[in-house]
Image 1 (cartoon, rainbow, N blue to C red):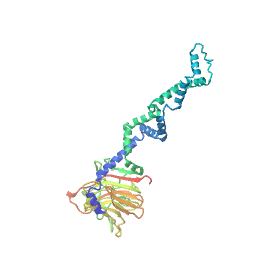
Image 2 (tube, rainbow, N blue to C red):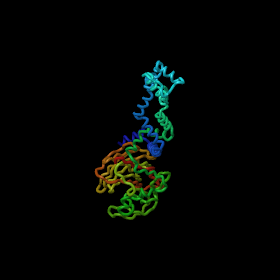
Image 3 (cartoon, helix red, strand yellow):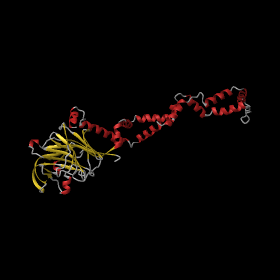
Image 4 (cartoon, one colour):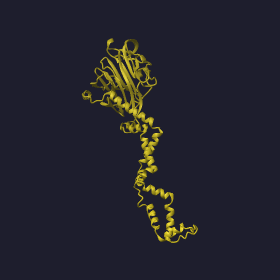
Length: 413
């Protein structure tokens, strides 16, 4: 797996994190544009018209109107019969009498079948409705005069509206179906100058819960210094490990919590009080130095300190990832080591949690999968910067940079 990842990364087969980030930003922009367009009256009218015009009934009526002809129609037959009757002797006599000074409308002497029928048809063919319908049937462009044609014209005009153009363009992207299945439940991009206190706590969650404050492990050389070692600049959060004298606490397995003088400080963050989730995808875009002395880690913890799921944990030119069972009594570490990353660049580390199945990805490329045998409850996020070997002033400060963190959940969950 490690070799495969390294080769694929070297050959450029694994997408660059910034390229993935740009694609995600484009997708979010399209989704946000849709959210702005959807309440508009123009879109409502466009969608209603489109449904009506594209309906089977509408198109059937359109074809019917377009296929109509005057010749062969009932109106044509009536007009022909009326014209033919006008040549009959009885009708000609009637017409002559009608034009004479002796004509009495109350006694038109309209006798005979031909004259009676002629009089009937005369009322029909001279009616404005008949004349109008004949003109309609004789017009080769008759459909353009119908209300249906006006609706189609309105639809075409709406399609030229900038708002509708944008809507149509967005709808062509099948990637948008992603939001039919997934919803964003955390999207932290550090756009504010200060850390969001409602989401993040600059402490070790279990340390502050058990002892009331953060403490370091006996193998660590840094004291945790709260917000003092958390910086936000240009929408990037940094956990800063630096040379600095400070008093703090360490956990000693024999003595318990004891006070110690530290020569270094660093930071830690958790969302134990601000955000938890059970299943879904959690990911972060980060950059750090992969050094044997330093640890930059992103992990998940549930209702107990262990098992701990490491989305990544930096080492010497590598990252480890996997599940850490309780370390007491030589507990098992299942960390898979990944080499070959360019640690001068940002990378996106992801973990998909689907029931008991865990899938790790780097820049959207799967690097490991495992299962967790027991339910850890709702999970929260932990970021940490720690030091395990002395480093010179020239090697510090170290910035564990986090550009964003997000979490997604399937909508049916």
